[in-house]
Length: 81
Image (cartoon, rainbow, N blue to C red; front, side, top):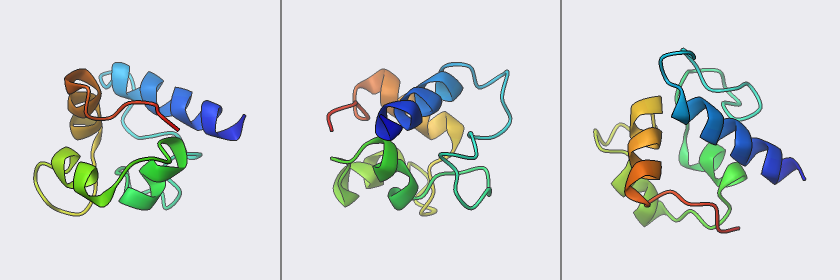
């Protein structure tokens, strides 16, 4: 149930980036406004380092809202866990 709630929070925020300036606190554990591999793996347990590298377009080690939204739109980041 917790995974579902986190997945829904990520999806809702990524779908409306204009309305939200940050990820939900339940997803962005450190509150820095981006998601690490570990934070995204909470919502997407099957996410691998290789897939995260595809999502993290600027290679800064964090996925911002634009990167998450683009990955979802491209079908790279899907709920599969």
